[in-house]
Amino acid sequence: MLIRPFILAAGSLCVAGASAQSSLTVFGVVDAGISRYSTKSSAYGPAALF
Image (cartoon, rainbow, N blue to C red):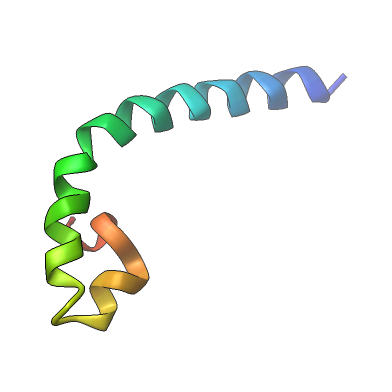
């Protein structure tokens, strides 16, 4: 019965990811401009800004 907690955890991660995705769209646009000058930015994405 270890599957149910895993599904709940995965579900909460999906919800958190969906809400974070909308707030990171601005960072994604900024990162697209930065990635032209930095390969690290394109490798790590918006998370590299934090």
